[in-house]
Image (cartoon, rainbow, N blue to C red):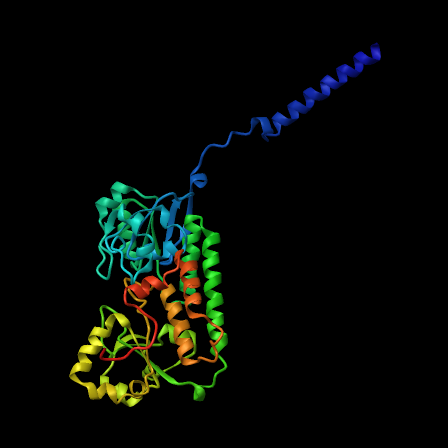
Length: 374
């Protein structure tokens, strides 16, 4: 009994000494650690937008509004359902902007927060009233994005991308996915685009220039419609299939107007024209039939359509379909295994969520041969 009492006394003293040592060390025991309190880090995060701006946004984005043509990219990114404010142009269903057609019922009931288009202006009061979690702003410069954020006190995320198969497009998708939490969807879109890009390139990359027909894209739309003199250097659908674009000898990149007599000098084997602008081409044809009838492509019946993909920004899905169609016309043997209508609707379904080729046809934007003057 005496031994047990001594053991109990020693155990008690050991506990007291250990407790004293813990207190005097200045270190908190788990029971003494302060309870975690909510912090900004738990409810907010900081991202870097495509203008190089650091923007603090909520940890979870439930609602968004747009400036410019950002609603298109958010459709690709799979989060158009979280838009609560769009532009007037977004709310106007237009066949040349497929995202406005597939979202027409939803967009019709949303508040207008800007004009849209080349002269887009934002409706600041509407944005403040809606108070979305973020605003996606396409093609605003850094100063304008900062000003919009200051005026509305809403985080503004700048988007800036061009082309169809470009790193800027893939980065824009990645950013939208990061912000909206749709990373898987954006990765799916980017993967499919890269596979189409690789497919188009692999089919055509080994064709010698000497074996390629010369081509020209006319009646191209940029800042409005144009006749046959409206064209494009480094025309993206042609670049994707390594086509021999006669315009590239100018060394210019992008949309331009040429002297029509230059086309006579180039006299390309194949001409592609935009169906939506054929009224302008046909009006000019009525005044100067000999000009057109003497072009090699016209005489040989090698005039085809290229549906305009630039309308309030780049409709990437139409541009990719254009590339496949041009490839089938220019190099029929290299694309003999491609069912164009099936491929087109595969692209549309992946990018915008539904088939769309028939709607283009119904709006007069057909893919096929063109007879100038009809």
